[in-house]
Length: 163
Image: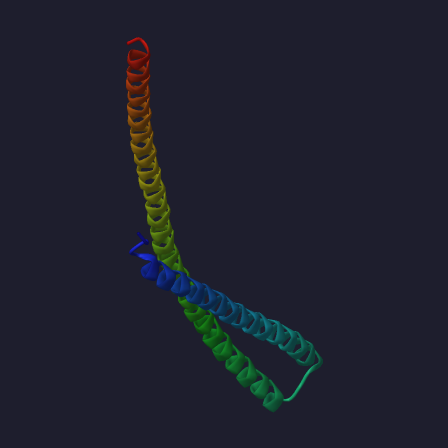
């Protein structure tokens, strides 16, 4: 008597493993997006600091205009990086939720498998107990029959001798 849901358990375990890998990949994507965002912000701050020093020393309007355009481009890049970071976080959270759902399914099937194994053990023990009881009963009957046969034979021998 095998566990009928074993194939489902095997599939669920494989799915949970695959979803675990997806969670790790989504987390790495989130980390990469976060790293990109932080680097952009660091470069912008560094550039803004250098630009501030140039402006204090005095520079041409063309240089100031180019610097303003560069800062606007960085601002757009930063906004894009924030959006990518948020999208990566949502994907990571969704992958995590999917994995947790699959993990719960695996745990439920494993619980059913353990219950099935316990039930099988109980049935096997009952079967062995029944067989043992049956053999003990047969043995007792056989012993009783042998004792009765032996007594009858002894009485017969005793009766023949006393005649």
